[in-house]
Length: 286
Ligand code: ZN
Image (cartoon, rainbow, N blue to C red; front, side, top):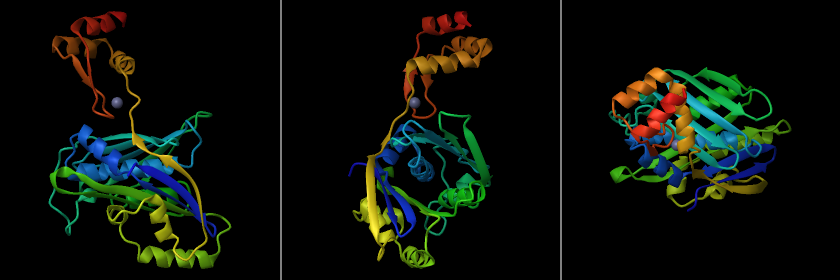
């Protein structure tokens, strides 16, 4: 199944649902993640895609989860066209299972969640809130309620099989519109109580539309456009050169002294090779 996101409304409630299995698998491979990091990064990237889905073309968001746990920061960039990238500071960490589940909350720890919206028109807007559990979906829900005064419900899930393979990943984002009636909220709440975990639904073969059908059972649903999703980084050798330039003379000189000629993009793990001559040319241009 190609990764995708679909939007729908029903009786004054809006929902976005996404299937992100392939792009989470790609991120996991690129960063050589152990399962906890795959789960955290997959949830964050899916969350960023759902939050970006409401933006206009070429607008984007950066979701940052900065906890004091052993995982370090979890960062995801996504835009309204369904492009996402992300990384975690320490992809190769491990913790014992917590009640049979990956200990994502413990690995993230206590700290802050922040969301920056780049609209292109004005200065980027950043809001933040304290982490509730480090499990990411709850943290995004809390952020939206505190920082943006928008009550919402977010579900995110990544299911990992043997040999670190991502079996299913995805999520949903539900928001009540101002004209919603109490009756619709009651039906929705009942549906959510019996809703299976999102990764399980996807593993059982549901697509994003199928997930929405489950969320909006017994409601009048209108489906809107579907967007393909993919992991893609905007890095290139010229952009990496700019990063090198920003390091300054001293750092550049010590890179050359160390004989280091490979530079790795933080966001996607892509490796760029520089010859000693190229590095020296950058240094002399400073
Ligand atoms: Zn990159």
